Amino acid sequence: MIDTHIHMIPGVDDGAKDLNISGQMMQMAINEGVNGMILTPHFNIPRYDNKNVKEQYGLLGDYIKENKVEFELHLGNEIHLSEENVEAIKSGKVNTLAESQYLLLELPHYHFYPFHEDAIYDLYHNDDYKIILAHVERYQVFTKKPAMIREFIQDGIYAQMTSEYIVNKKTRKSALKWIEDGLIQLVASDGHDITRRPPAMKQAYEIVKKSFGESCAQTLFENNPRLIINNDALLMPKIEKVKRFSFRNN
Image 1 (tube, helix red, strand yellow):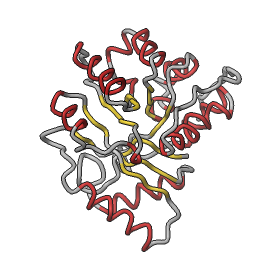
Image 2: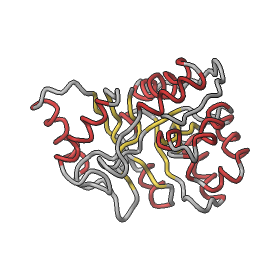
Image 3: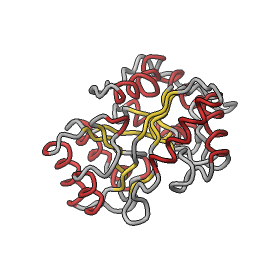
Image 4: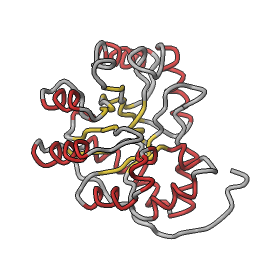
């Protein structure tokens, strides 16, 4: 698997605090079946402006070499959608995902104004970026109006879901419904640490595999992440089957 949304660069945002935590997160991810990542530190002026990001990212590259870890790393950003940040995108101050045309955008959780919609489509149509909306399950506008996210998907915008939303028994039914309805193209951990928000992916993969088939799981966790790195269009997951079963013991 390739994790396309994780905060593992040490000391640059609210993710890993130091290289020791970063190393532990990487090992946890490897144990989960992840062998590559696109690291996505927050970008949100003025608090997060990519200061020291490339230098700290380099520390992880050195860590891999020194410890002879077989692990693929790429750099990106999770970009909060605001006027200042859009200008930063246009002026080249942010990192696209793995040096591709893909942007990972974060929307406000509790409000969605015409500006946000206009900005997404402007970046997509006028600036030729490929847009991925991060952790779409958190946005009130989509949970209240699922038709809106469907419109984005139909227009060529992509949606990423957090693995924990699939694993959590309180939200699993909703998560699987979104996948079944073709509203999700990527699943990522959004990992921040080793305890409260670890880089967990394996259980979510198995749940999707058991629910909709291995092809669907591979598309969400493996194939589409690789297509981002290759700067290619993402695939729509194929629902091979819908198997209803108990997760009580999972």
